[in-house]
Image: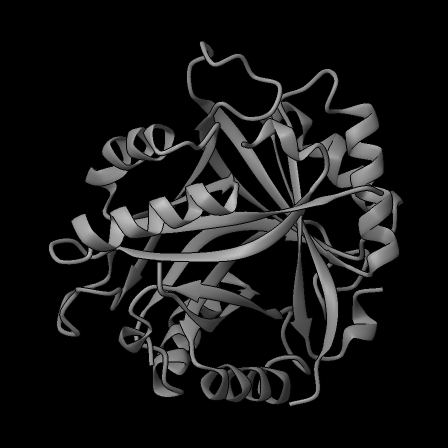
Amino acid sequence: MHTVPLKLVTIVAEPVLEEQLTALLHRLGARGHTVTDSRGAGSRGMRASDPPGGGVRIEVVVGPDVADRILAHVAEHYFPTYAVIAFVSIVEVVRGEKYV
Amino acid sequence: MHTVPLKLVTIVAEPVLEEQLTALLHRLGARGHTVTDSRGAGSRGMRASDPPGGGVRIEVVVGPDVADRILAHVAEHYFPTYAVIAFVSIVEVVRGEKYV
Amino acid sequence: MHTVPLKLVTIVAEPVLEEQLTALLHRLGARGHTVTDSRGAGSRGMRASDPPGGGVRIEVVVGPDVADRILAHVAEHYFPTYAVIAFVSIVEVVRGEKYV
């Protein structure tokens, strides 16, 4: 099976940020996104004493440049203020041109 | 910790396909699956004008041959007709013989 | 974008184990966790004849030593008795010092 490597960017954030973050991801170049509801505790920026709370887990499959732009934007504009985490992994996809 | 590398295949699709896809995954060699409900927009095959909609995110941990078979089948039989995305990453597991 | 490689550990288990497992993950060194509700079948330890059931999908981003400790503990104490699966992948994060 011929596949191409792309980046899977996962962002976990407060539910109130879902609309803003998905709009941002598309503006930075994502062609689609998947959101699942989550809960958790201790995310970056939360105090250890915070109670576990609801969250959203947002995923996009994008090219490496878009992944970099997303990480840079989220680190600069969200990490200082919000309980947001973001991580990137390599995924293989079929027909990669659909994602970039 | 001794681990072995396997493949994590993630498929995001319309909820109506859940039963059909999980049955397919088992038929192609998966020994288990995990499904989470999701929502999203802009997935492969969707028009950009489509409203965000509910989805299911299906995961299986399998050997490389099964992963290839799944990707090939999904690309041939689902990509032309459905808003389905599929991606594969490498994961390390303990006691890998349970998955293949 | 400067990133550092860490480990994403994903554990899928019966819902009754959520509190116990998240407490364990923090005790073993995780600084945060994300839980999503799932459903599935055929997980490690389940009999093929078991009906699909609800589950929880727990994720932590941790350093390699903590990831090893988690896998070892889960394999020793949970695999023999419970329908638990665990897998680890490499993720890139910004400001990795927050996770370890």
